[in-house]
Length: 135
Image (cartoon, rainbow, N blue to C red; front, side):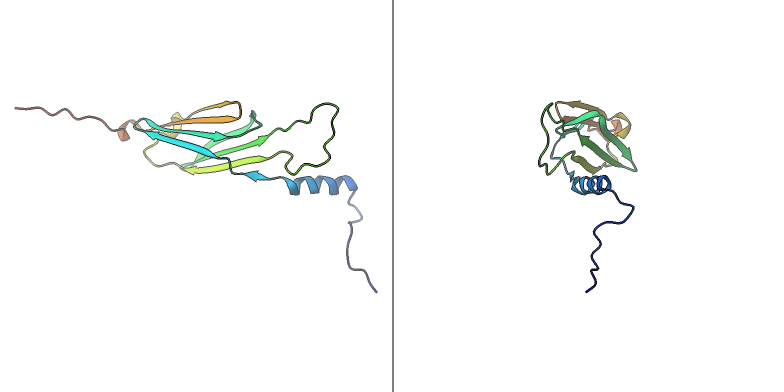
C-alpha cells in the first residue's frame, strides 16, 4: 500500500510550519463604528483596541476612505502563551465618501484604542441661509 499523504516538504523546517500556522490564524476584523452627521460634516468613531499610531493607516483614494490597523497584543513578562485564537488581529474597513465631503481636510485622532475621524463638508455643500429682501 502506497502512502500518498505528504507530511512535509523536504526543504520545509518546523519553524516554517509554525510560522505558516500563525499566519493562517491571523484574523481580519471589521471594527465597529459609530457615525454622526450634521450640517458641518461627519464624525466617525471606530473601535480599534490594541492598535497604536505607528500600526494604523488611514487613507483616501478614489473617493474611498480606508482604515487599516494591526493590534499589538503583548504577553506579560514571565508568562508564555499556551493557546491564543487571535494573536495580532488586523482591523480593516472601507467607506465610500460622497462628493459633498472634503477629503483633503479630514482630521484623525487616536486615543485609547478609539479612532475619531472628522470629515467636513465642502463649503459649497453646506446648507446656508438665504436672506430675503422686501422691496
